[in-house]
Length: 279
Length: 184
Image 1 (spheres, each protein chain N blue to C red):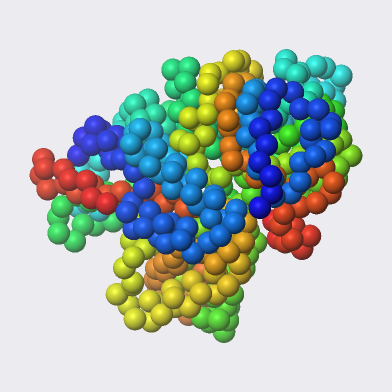
Image 2: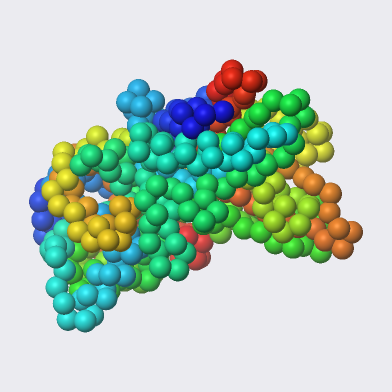
């Protein structure tokens, strides 16, 4: 995996919306009316301009999150990712978004302490696999986590997720995708809620219980009526995606990562020197 | 749906006053990008008796941190306006800004300031940065670059910049009922 491969994947991710997301936006546009329909028309035109002009669809090119699966050479992969991010910042280009949290001084190249965020796990088949997510701040700022009591159970999980979306209102650029992480610990639940956003939104979960819960949550969220950009309507969310982990018998951690309509994700797969980009 | 207007140059009280919630405006002229840090710096300057290096009287503030490269605006959609709610009322009062453009709506303090100083708040479709950049003719000036690219004040010459939907007008009206319930 070379820095150039990472930079090219970032370019495609920032300029071309995944087809499952674009299809969902087209469906929403057809279902809405008035200002809600007009903003979706503008968004779809924006998606076309970005793809054809090879420019980032949103000026907030996000914080970059990397999900790596590899059994070795992690140091080499980390360097390729960091160099690739700096390269992409110049070439795509990306907006320099990363600042010191206290002084607010911008690092200028999207690198910094803890940035980009890289999460590593073993590879099941020995190949190197990298998923990338560009997470804008408008939606990240309304994401939320909580530690429920176990007796609050599934009803409590649903209530927390729906409340997070209700409180977010128009801020995260709806129609949104809602990633929910359940179980693990505070940090694990948050990470699961991010990983959930890497799943396609046109394929249900393989787990029948989770799949049903995703459907129920989506219906409840869409009954809020927030609508595209908060202008009211049937489509507040395009999808809900849930990822779960086992947890302590005394705990029920829940995290909700809210994602704007511009769900920018991409995957790289490397088998030896052969690197492929997958959507 | 409301009426469509093109606003050119500096906006007068009468012109702002005729805009109603639900109207669509297109801007041809100058807009000033200002977000979190520029709002803080502007207030600090004005409260200390200083003057801003740019003139907002009758002008348009755009809540935006543009993606700029090689002197060109590449992508320039709006940022979430509600983060500026703590500053905007005083900014409007002290500068005479006539129009605020952002996304997501604003709160009661801004709504009151819009009514007192005859100004409007309008929303550009969120995330539509590539579309917005097409309306930018050129960068006229840039101020406060020490704040970093996204937080600097970019004075942009725009042509037909829109659609911007008026969601808070100068008569105390808002498009979103939920504003009153504190949802936004």
